[in-house]
Length: 151
Ligand SMILES: [Zn+2]
Image 1 (cartoon, rainbow, N blue to C red):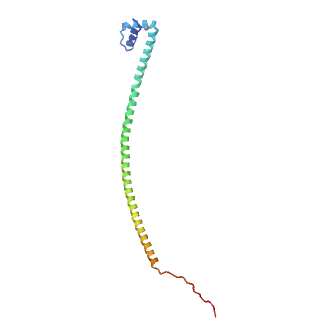
Image 2 (image 1 turned 180 degrees about the vertical axis):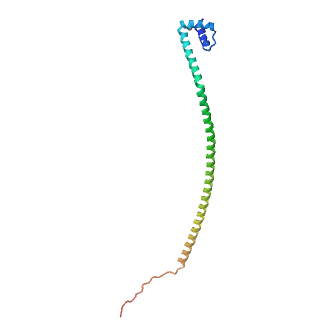
Image 3 (image 1 turned 120 degrees about the vertical axis):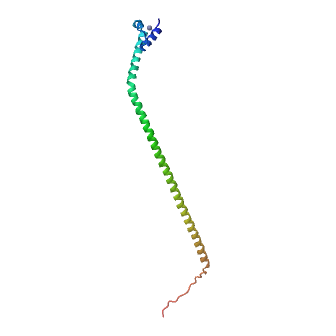
């Protein structure tokens, strides 16, 4: 038997599948083989660690998993609610903006009409003033002597 055979026996021993009769044979080899004894120690440590973690983990792991699931569910619900709230708010804002722009457009067109009317009036007045100016007779300025002698 070579070391490879003993290594598979070490594996079987740790899996609790090694026949009782072979255990003595295995330990006898381990006592004399540095390579196989280090493999045995390594396997023992590994099994111990796995066993320890396997016992320790489930309770904590389970709690954490449930906590995360709860958190995710509540976040999802909150997310949907807040998303809907934001959506409604955005729609309301859009409608408000449309009304404001319609109002502003109407007021600006009103102002435009007013300005057009005023400028038309100003033009008419200008024409009237020109007509008036043209119809006035020309004025001649002459000097007259005024005697201010007192007798
Ligand atoms: Zn060996």
